[in-house]
Every structure is written in C-alpha cells, then in structure tokens.
Length: 140
Image (cartoon, rainbow, N blue to C red; front, side):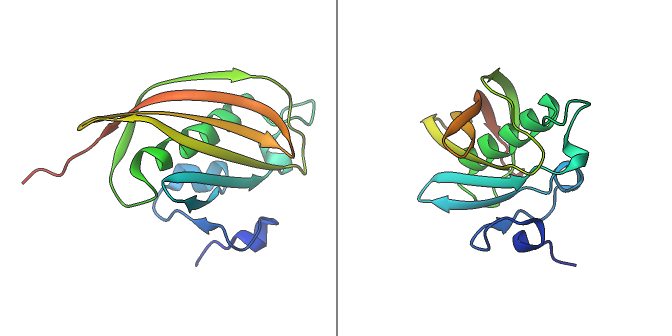
C-alpha cells in the first residue's frame, strides 16, 4: 500500500521515499527536490512527542538525517550512509506542527558528501544539522 502525504496532512506535491522501514515507522517522512536541494516534511503526531507534547529530539534527529541523506543522494536511488552527524536544537516543535526541512550540499566528493540542513516550523528554526555522508558504490 502506498504511503500518501495527504493522508498525513502533508502537502500532496511531496512524495514518499520507498524502502526504509525505520523512517516509515518513525515518520512517515516525505520529500520533494528543488534541483539538488531536498525539501522534506512530516506532521508531528502524538507518537512523535515526549511527555511535554513536544517532538522528541530523537525523532527530529532522524528526520534531519533523512533530509541530509536526500541532499547527499540528490533524491535519487544512490545508496548512502551517515558517517557523522551534528545537531543543534534551537526551539521546540509541538504536536500538530508541520515540520519541514531544507538541505544543501556544501561539498560533494567522489566518496564523501558534506551536507547541512535546517528543520523549521513555519519560519522558526527548531534544529540545525550538518553531516558527512558516504556514497556507497555497487560492487562489480
């Protein structure tokens, strides 16, 4: 069964990345590409929140990783893995919020990609992250 963004109160021009069971369980998360820059989104539900009804930091970090990896693979099917990820929390996000991410590639090498992203609720940044992502080449 297809996971549709509108079923999660996410704008319908976003799409679902098929094949990552962990992201589907945590999210689900959705994305669209603007050139090589990912724009990501998910609607914060009760199961994303801690005891204060704010989105759990681990969920935000998983969503940042999703955004960063989409930046590294350009929204294509290239396999990538996170080598390191740094996150700074700047504000809380609460149940019901549409959380959206914007990613950008800082530098793309043959095997490593340096990326950064911001997660926002409306115009307020809730998390900034940067990562080193390894491109996985298929063995021949």
